[in-house]
Image (cartoon, rainbow, N blue to C red; front, side, top):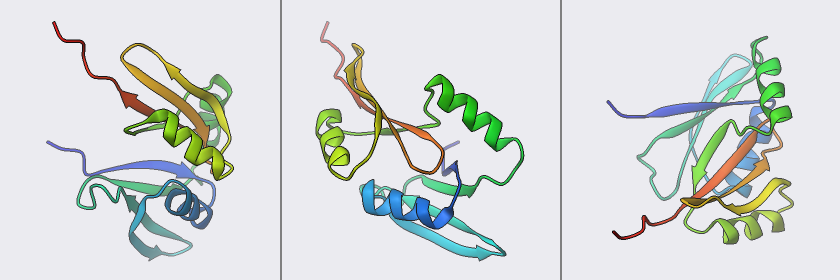
Length: 133
């Protein structure tokens, strides 16, 4: 068993595509029209054959209250791994990204949380090497 695809609900697929590619640096993988929406996925340029992130329309009635509750409580909907959380924070801040949590050392990792402009909070995480025994 392996993860091939996961999704994040977005208010506007084209706005999300611009943010996830131009700002975050992902690469568009699929853009297949399906009526008013598309099967729109992005991948990491570091793993173009790796898991895809579906930028899924947020039209289902359960999505808004679910996402609103997560944002209100400060809970990220999705998490992405980075090599250097501080450097990524500075890079994204330079692109105007709004962070709700600056890089914070939590012992085993450094995390930060930002608003993806599409209705979600996103966490970046830099895992720290385990201390040698």
